[in-house]
Image (tube, rainbow, N blue to C red):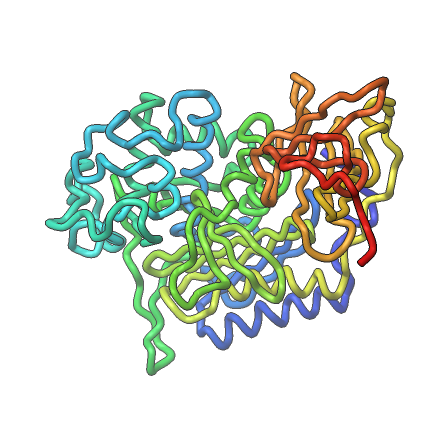
Length: 462
């Protein structure tokens, strides 16, 4: 893990703390929530928590459990990505390869993760969040008369049964209940001892608040059984802070940074009219206050939850409330990030020279030209390269080195494409081949390597 100056990890400044507490207080008061807890993660630790309201006559804190609803889906997605990384499945596999579920046999694992399977949004009635899971004892029991409402892969349509199937997939390939697998493979390594399938004291009770009067109604907290992977988990601000650190930096015991980055790549176009939101693989994606955030929101009867991470700011915001509706829980968590980022902008990492310099790699750096368009090629750590346009416009990408002497694009237009060096005479590279695009050391170099050739008379004045 990257090391940082110690002062980056002190608690926020007094003015920042007051602004954070005010945002939590506004959310609790305006949202009429019995209680609301907020938390902020900076770099690799929890740096602030605050709360308003009461739980059992005491102020809730970072150790008070709340039900986190659909935040459960991101945990399940991590389990599925672990199976993929171990070679036990491919994201392109049809579900039928691993499970006998005729209602969704045409959907792929990736489509289930990204809510593009076409499955219905909810399980067969009655209202599954408020009724015992025993009413749906088998996987087939979660489907109603019309399990598919859209063709698979055509559009984003949020599906809770889809994640129930992913939980069943985990159970099939691991040979154990998904909750046990989660505890062993994710919660224990990350030190999340206060995250569980059932509530553990101290925990908040779930309430509904009357829309027209300041009175409460207790909500049931059912074990949702087969639907559990869609929203069963209980957790705390402290445990979710540990999960946020994991989402930022990865953990070799659980899932690496490359797989986590894959989870937050938009999988489908956003819903019509919602160009500030999207979905990856078990991960919600939003833009808030000019920032790109990834994470998830959640709701169950009596509870609301949200966790957002800003990779650029190295910040995460968490908000938990024990009410069925009211507080704009996603906006509260996002605003906590914005408050810290604006009051205390992140201090950049110190520049450091590379530990070693390969002369052959240094010879690749500098200006290159795709036709008449100028680019810069820079050497990064671990033999990586970075290609960027010299002027506005053009395609920028980072590349990671491969054992065979080529490079693979990490992002942008060239993500997944291969960059190779074509050797010339002596030690100098003749040109670069990037997915058939030829880059030369001068614009339209007249040496026969530019596809289609270069006019023999060369550059001229009119």
